[in-house]
Length: 85
Ligand code: SF4
Ligand code: SF4
Image (cartoon, protein in one colour):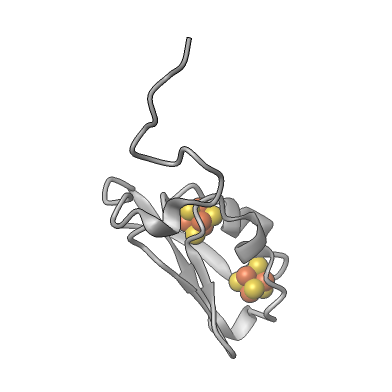
């Protein structure tokens, strides 16, 4: 049976082209920039491409972030905490 294409994450890493898919989350990542050493593990592990890296900082794009907490678990310096939204 061939299933129809869903409107969500039907391809790995495609969430960047789907706007505002995460308004239902109950928690969101918060960065303590003083603890971040730019290792980029959060960017690598985020399943929703919700971590943006600029020249000198990490930022979470909350329109895409689902609040799963993977980034906080994987961060080796405990720079990310999850807070209620
Ligand atoms: S995983 Fe942690 S230390 Fe590494 S870039 Fe992300 S916030 Fe910074
Ligand atoms: S909480 Fe989950 S979806 Fe949000 S930035 Fe972290 S890993 Fe990505």
